[in-house]
Length: 499
Image 1 (tube, helix red, strand yellow):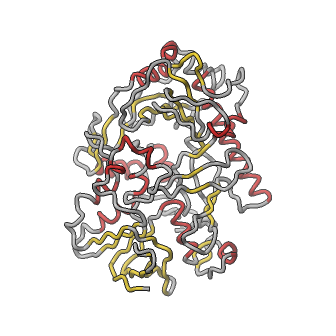
Image 2: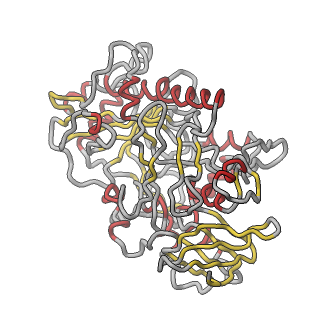
Image 3: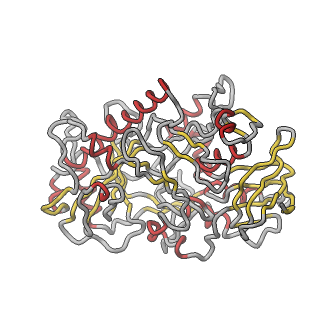
């Protein structure tokens, strides 16, 4: 173990959040900051920076590519992409830019999280963006360039026409209100030449080499947080030579920003987590915290594909350029169903089951906006090089807890996702709502005679459960692996609170 120096702040994880935190902390020339990232740098790497090429990054050397534990219900071939590169998933996924819904922020504040209301947060979003959208609520001088996707895809234009004819009016996003039932071109964080505007590109690239108080170390895989008298004081990591381990100390704070999967994994390897689980691997429990890795959240998603009647586009900003939002019942102030329109086929979870595919097609991906099921992150061994065990439905729980998790996961998929699968191809959300894209006049110009590349939707409102189960996946928007403590008066703590 080598002495790798001492800084005021040590940040473990140079992902979406870590890059921003490093840039902001190092604005003060009187503090020193060390940022550690397991993956490579993205500087001058066109494989990362060209946004239109983002799908090549899936299942590549830039991807941790976590397998999901076998599921009692649904698709057990799920893969959970997590970025292994500076900038994290903002350097790896597509770049859809959404302002946080006002209703969500105000709900968080009402639950006791002071400082998280829309009145508190929206001015901060305005400050970070340079947005080409209309309105005084948008920022014009922030580090993150955000632009509206140009309407250059004829199939996408027809999709919006079909949606409008079916009752989902064409809408603009990030206009100061939540679109509950509507569809429109996304806003994306990219520059005019379609360079990805990741957190690393927006916050770190402009300052690298200009601040002597900021040190970036890539290829450094953090494996443990050191504690002294109950306080995090250093982190240990494997150096780029893959042989030497180093320990870098923090005078003020150690900041963990390794994402919703690797942050709880790192805590557990450090002796912070559910004591019974740590004992399985001979790890001394320094802090018994049952909530570490116990609140994993993501939206369940399906896929519906069609053969296209006309040739699809061969160039795009990011191939997923339109969002469609809907409510599954009356009176909701936020949508509970969303679909991404893709101008490419997406058969990762259908071809293995024998469903047909195409080289000239398009798809919609219905997903649950506000899922209720929760999963877990658990250790596979005490070796930091082993991938964490990621389970969408609490694999470690037993009895009523496990049955409840399975039930909520099934409700998310069947009662919310199935209507989303039906929506593009018939009445879908119930005859009372009368919605469905396929019967719309504009749809006739889109789908070829072979049409939809999956089993037909049953008549009426019969759910398509088995097809949903086969090809169901997660949206790769995992969060909640370390549930935060509510702040303010009346804020509860709870058994699963971590920080």
